[in-house]
Image (cartoon, rainbow, N blue to C red; front, side, top):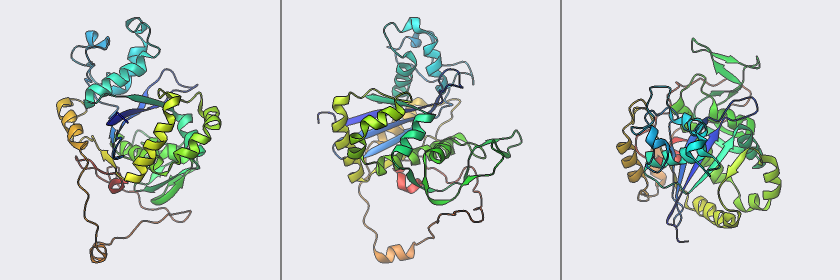
Length: 330
């Protein structure tokens, strides 16, 4: 009640039994106005170079000009970098997590209140525990696939499989591929899809039901999701998520290559974009029937198992540099 805005960092980790170390595969700040529920999703590109450390992080002494050693020193390497220097973080349980939070706060100019770390298995289990998620797919995405050196797509199972255009109900496996696949695409398109899925999960979750099922859910994901929110605060988060859903104002700030240069990012510009985007836009007038008729367009429908839909270009749909309602880009 006494906190006007809550900033939560969602960290998607690719850690697993068959992987060494932890890379932050996706980073997203969820900034929520606790009174109105207005929420801004800010995707942080994982390939940002020269990311700054705040003065109170020990790594700032080693990298006073930011994490700068060329294209080997990227945002998604901060976790592993910090974990490799535990001597600099006495008493800190996870230097990697703390440093990732610190750097994202410095990039955005926001004080990060909480963080959630979820790995691949945890994300899949979470979506399945919710009964799946409905997404309006705007870019055809391959499943169980990777890119060949020539840019073509290969299927690791030997079977061609796609998430087709239009409204689709995705289970955990398909939601994970929709959020992570880069074959025939790029990082910025993937970031847009991640924001769309995150927004859909927020809008479609039933927090009261999930809280009631918390013991069973915890057993499923106990080794795959880590949150730093005190259990006593969970009921307050139920109220907050309900307010976000009622407000129906989840917006997205796309930090794409048309806005920033990942190799030489202007962090002052990023902080300015974030500050401007936190201000909720004035409500738009409700369109009339004649307006709707004049601007009607075809709505994509599920493609099912019929003939495959045409594959849009990797960059479509394009993001603007301004924050927009998530529904406009999803």
